[in-house]
Image (cartoon, rainbow, N blue to C red; front, top):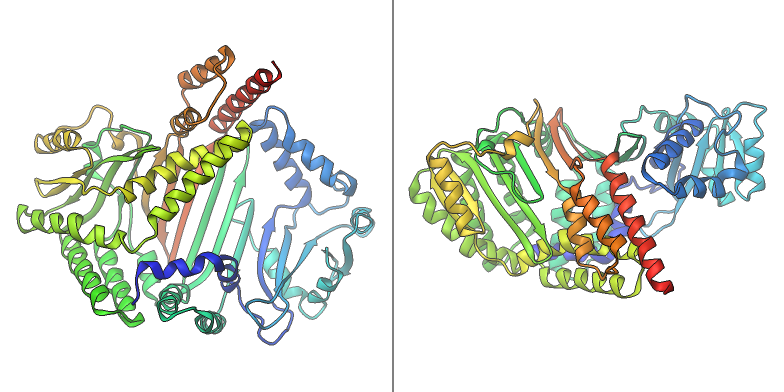
Length: 533
């Protein structure tokens, strides 16, 4: 039967699926399958240096760049263009999805620049095509760029960047269909094949995918842009109106270390839910799974009918779980919706969670965290500890799922996994009482902005450090107390829709990044001094 477990088939095939997102060169012609665009070489060096100085008090990033690229002209790169992007272009070297990828680097230099010669002397293969320098680690890869296709390749490289560094992948329906057929043929069992069908029912409607990062002295950003094919259900969802007021946000106190608000089009969400469940039915289901999914579809569509598209949440991520409180805007009647929510949270959600390998993932997070803390230095243990606070806490909450308490108050749904917090929030909604420091005071939505959120990186960072075996020294205590007393801006989350396009960005202020880095370096130094005694 089809179930959410079907998607677990992709875990050992993650690299192959990523390759599947690229157009397949079935005939062996040298057609580019994707491009990593970067700024002009001098600009790239300036950005790396400026970002390094802003975030790294030891300047290790600048030292690493100089050490690895100094022999080929870094940071000035004499003769390199200051206006043309640098591109890393990928080509598929065969007809099978297991074939290898060939990569070439393209950059623009003046005719008398010595940099291409230095690059060649450093061990890369180099040739000139159409006034551009083409470089590759494998000399055979150079044959994928020639006078016959250089203009097509350059159209990818020269495209205006949305981010400083970005990977863009485009694929045609025919190419995706070929990949779909090959993966389906390799599926271990019918359930896995149905999972592949579900995945490609979405992928076939995505025209292009872009992932990027921005580096500057004010912020660090990670983002994505997904463009749906015109006329597809995904295009309708990605084009839905979004943004504007979220009245329920004023009720929710900004407690914990994260919060978010959203405002989207209920009709667009309902329409896409219909398509999603139609795809599940088309993928094939056994009676037990079909009954569960039918019940889920009916419940969600019934709830969505009286939903106004808004909601506001306050969350607290911690190692043992995630606490939350929320108000969802709408015009629901006490009955039958109160009973409907009881059935949804107490019966349907647990049944769906049983289809996911949550316990295995939670155990993996715990094992990775324990291993890094036991064997690694502070710097390597920290990512595992932060993962335990956020991912581990979230997984623990799902693994030990308890149905949230809820009430319908003045047509709105009030939710929390903490009964006392629910009663307080429900009373505030009933009294039309705005919280003194609400989620709405911290977040607002622009036109076209479907979701906005924040995550207090400092609080999660401090919680993560508390999970580690840190040396109990005065210097460590001082570093942690200074960080706790520092007011740092949170990481922000931004999701937008419009013109068949969904975009999302995570932004970390550089001041926050630097403060956390400084604290880590102080703790590392304290640990090193403690070990020397």
